[in-house]
Image (cartoon, rainbow, N blue to C red; front, top):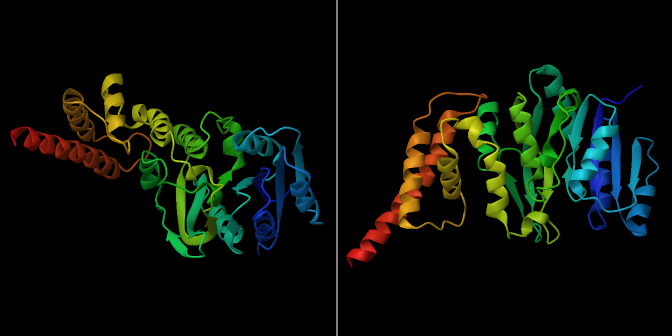
Length: 308
C-alpha cells in the first residue's frame, strides 16, 4: 500500500546534523510515511551515514552529480507516492508530533493546499528563539511580498495532487528563494495556505546555510516580487511596479526624481481595494505604506540638509 506522507529530503555533501535530521523523521509519532532521501552528488561518508539506517521506509535516490537543492526536491516530488508531501531539510529537526498534527489538520480541512507551522530557531550557541509565522490564508499570501515572512519551507506539508496537476516545480534560478518562488506559483494556481500556531520544527542556523550569505539578497527577492505585483496590483504600469519594488529593498538608493515616482506609485497601490487571490489587502497596504513612509522620511531629511 502507498504511504500517507512522502517526505522530500534532499541531502547535499554535508555530514554535520544529517543523522539528527534523519532520526527526527524516523522518530515521528505518525509512522505511515516514506522518506525520500535524494543524495545530491554526495561523498562516501554522507552516503554511508544514510545507508546505516535499516528502516524500510527510507528510499534513496542517488544523483551522480550535484544538481542543487531545487532539482533534488523536484526529483523526489516526481517519485513521491503519497497524497501529502512533507518538506524537510537535512540540517533541521522535526519535532515528534509534526506529521501527526499536520496530517490531522489536512484531513480535516480539505480546502487547504499548504500547511506550515511555527518553529524554533536553533542558534550556534545553543539558544532557541521562537519563530512565528502567519496563520491565515490571506495573511500568508500577502506576506509573500516580504518573501521570507510567509511560510518556512521545511515546516510545509503540501497536497501532492495539486502539485502534480499544475506541474509545479522548484526553480533552480532562485538559489536562495526558490521556495518562495514555488509558493507564488501555488498562489497563482489557487492554493489555500494555513499556518499551524505550534512549534513543530527546530530550524538550525549555521555557517553552511545559504541564507547566511546576504550578497544579492535584494536582487533575488525583487525577482520573486516581480511575479507578485501583477497579481496584487494589476493597475500598476511596468515602470510604476519597478520603482515600487525598489522601495521594498533593504538597500534604498534613489535620486530625487525616482523618490517622487516611488511615492506616487505607492499612492496608486494604496488605492487598490480589490482582492484577487484571497490576499489580505490591509497587510499589503501596511507594507506599501511602510515603503512610502521610508522614502518620505528620506526626502524630508534631504530637504533639511539642503536648507542647512
